[in-house]
Image (cartoon, rainbow, N blue to C red):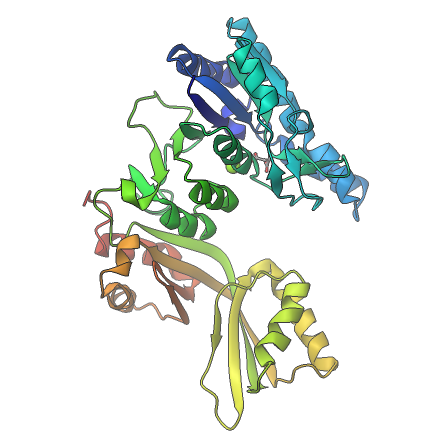
Length: 412
Ligand code: ASP
Ligand code: MG
């Protein structure tokens, strides 16, 4: 029997009615002849509640116990989903991560998947079971402790199962009906894409189009798992949702596929650092050790052996970054005249695989922003992406203007 993986996010299983509703969808796929692996998230809001319990109980919590508590939301949904399917006369049972066993590293709350043995579940399918319901987001460490994969980790569980079981497809049911050319909440012309390439989705996922956990897209790309993102609240059809797939499977690649934004960015500049071998390492090592997620980095042309170094990071990490840099300065590892911070910026990016073979996208983007009177503070580019930092107050305007200029509302 061909295998299908279906993943249901928190809003899709938020209460018993919704669980019944999505269980019917599972039933439809079973009727088509699939053996189905269902991956479930915790009911909406549950994981946040559990995280709150842990933090209130123990501010400097033991990460192993954090995982023990926080993983439990998925266990409830898995059992309820299996029961619901049984009530519909669909043979089903639940698995917690350790029962599979989904083996992970010991990096609690950010564990990586090491292996998913398939024998256990395949044997049950042979014996006539139709649906394996697996608790997402969790696994077991070599030490035998429960681990979790990081927030949003059920997406990664789903893709990993699809890869391990060589599933025909991995359908991710969520509360949006697909991947859009931009955020529909700030641009009403945003259009749902029928298909998007893995690489584009990776850029959009990490740029803040929060549909899929970034790691799940990396995994899907590595194992060529066809991913479909679709809504559990709308009627199902074969064209529903967005297919995230290899670029070979997309006939006409878009020059620009989407405009992404990331609201809470900060820009930090170290004024006048000595321009010598090792200076970048001396600045960015302490930042990385302090857990600062540095995104863009720009080093200026130097003058008289001194240069300015600018980088961006999330706004809520500015204090941590500053502390790490001042410490490095005090210990004599680096030297600078001043740190200048701008915590009122946002990042806007245009993404598209077609940029590899088309010129002029950057020029057009800059012209659009200039026509709107928006100043660009930092620019970075990659093969399929151009990102800029601008004042946060222009975020909506910039997204809308770029969406218009690249005609993303029209099917190309
Ligand atoms: N329940 C977990 C979270 O909220 C994992 C997931 O839903 O993907 O982060
Ligand atoms: Mg999610």
